[in-house]
Length: 535
Image 1 (cartoon, rainbow, N blue to C red):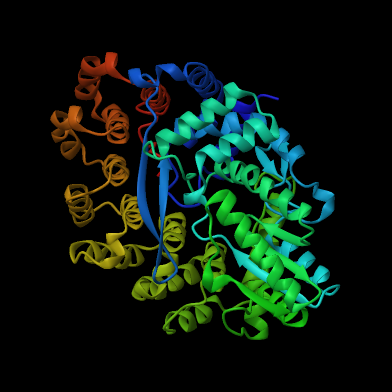
Image 2 (cartoon, rainbow, N blue to C red):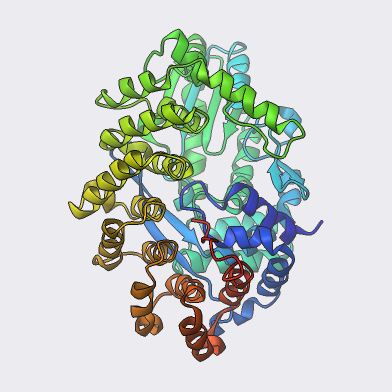
């Protein structure tokens, strides 16, 4: 199997993370897969050249909101290095899978390896969070007590040396591959010897390798359990045994791995209490009770395969099913609450694009008026609007533009989160107007703006045809970060002769990723003058 091909197919088909905006390189990976494979393979084989700048490992770390008051530290990985890391990890993934408790044991339900080079899939869809809880509920019936816990700040606290040991000494991974993985991880963590970048499949697979050693110790200690990532459910015949198993787990995690349990998510309950808890989770009623209609909608699977032989029929059937529900009423009721039902609200947002045009515009009107109430799912909301806004009428576009520009101009708390600002910039690129350009310029120039935000601003200005603004930034090129330089290099192709002349002056200083990006854009523009960067 060509693991680099699989990695690129996975990224271009499913995205690189579930946190950050989609990098334009992902579209390149799809359009120029053979060229991308060559570059990524060279990166992997020539890792000693990293310091020369030919293949710079670049990252941006920012804080992202979780819920209403929580935050987590996340890392955006340079798309090329994200592909390289995933390729290396996929090449050892089946060895990791063999080391784990067998899937047939019905114990471990997270990220079971099942590679498919044609589709780009990495994991077995039959093993998931739902099956984790359904199986746990069935197992609990054989016991009297259940212990639930998860690990505090798990991904960020994984110790590299212990991961290294697990991969090389426990699982038997080739030292050369382990060294390459560790080199990338150390660079991404800022030379701090702990932490995995949250959100990508490489990190998910490595985390399972790390946790597999814990699974084996719990097995040896005779602790019956189920696990989904860092969520553990233990089963006991008595309260005393439940506390004993909890102590074993906490002691193991602290002494062996330096990890601790989340206090507010650690609980001992009777098996009947757990059954009620599991049912409420599976039925979507954990946070608050949903009426029958909302509960039915919540449990819907809102997805269809656009590449299926029956794609058109599947799409129309899904539209018809969604039309049975009053989504506008659902939205109105959610935004009036002091705290929204986040999972239910996400389900509503994901379904809006399947409505007819008039209902989409009505939904957006409600959402944009109450955008602050949807703070906890802000990226989901903005991504949905991006997908549908081009087909909306001018009045809807004006309402959205005015609201978003006001948030930026007033320095709303919604804009204080860099990731939110990146999504907003991308939305404004679909709403070209002087006010939009001014708002993006304001974000670009604000103190402490991350290179991720600045690069998105540059790309947005390209699609808004703000060529004069772009031209004025040429003199700042040498002081730009890698991501900004790559974005500006992409922008230069839209400056026609001026851009071509400028590129000749810096071509000898480009990294391989930038060169490939330029070649890709050159195939799209100016041959197709209406083509826009995919943001």
